[in-house]
Length: 115
Image (cartoon, rainbow, N blue to C red; front, side, top):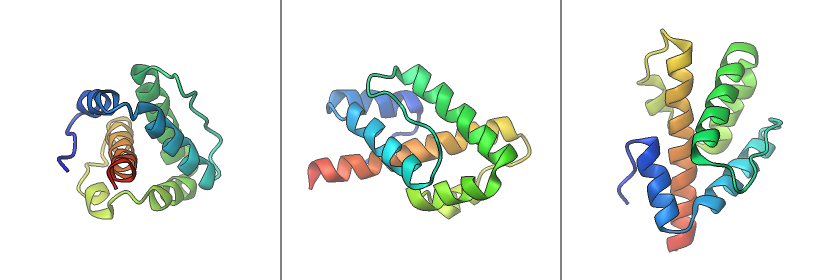
């Protein structure tokens, strides 16, 4: 499996394989497991998804750091990938973490679909 390198690539591949809704459902499931009150509508536009996820991650980093760490653990985002990010700019960090979350959720959905 070749992992997407940008948000647009990820959404394009998910739409091509008709897995976008499953990606949203997986996100909702993991956010619910982490007790984070965020529920994406199945028909959410990719741009809205990106914006809402970025905003939520930013707030978690700023205000609820332990919940943020718990979410990363539940989603199983690579600790190595998180450590490789530059944490100087929190807004940029939140954007990069949002993409890592989406990419990990995409992996789960893709593997379930293929196997």
